[in-house]
Image 1 (cartoon, rainbow, N blue to C red):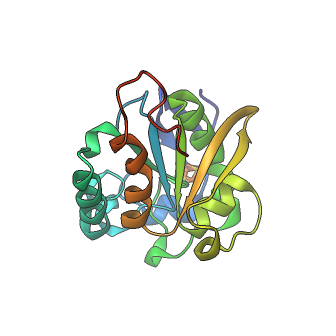
Image 2 (image 1 turned 90 degrees about the vertical axis):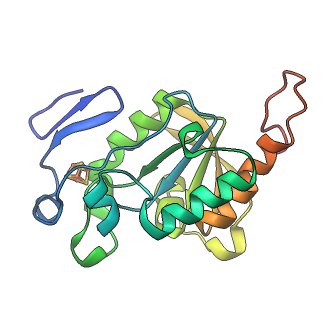
Length: 188
Ligand code: SF4
């Protein structure tokens, strides 16, 4: 996909100038990581300082929490896909503005549709409301699954609050796999 303001190579955004303020504040575009056919795809809000420096989503303290929770269930980071609603660090780590979320949505939808995971896991209020396109009381709704369509393609979304809780809930379905050939996430 290429236009005058953005260019993708596969699931990665190579160039993009759609958000002037974020172009000023970023060091780099932070693309999603993990297999392009992962069963689980985690969606966070935006890169923070560590992600901007490292060029990878969920590194630093939040990344350690995620890695630990995955490890407790026998999974490694390399087995799941991790991405963000916007790919460039907002100044002072503020929430991304609606226009910025909208600018980056095409990339996110292409990534989710390309991976086509069994479960999309939203990590917090911003990604939950963004993907479900409604207000969400994430603390109350955490752990529930809702169907949504992204650019016409159906997906199941697990609403979560925090990386640790999200990961534990999601990987429980994988850990309970009995090798029968059925979906490893049938319990969700
Ligand atoms: S946040 Fe997304 S849309 Fe905005 S400049 Fe970065 S890559 Fe482009």
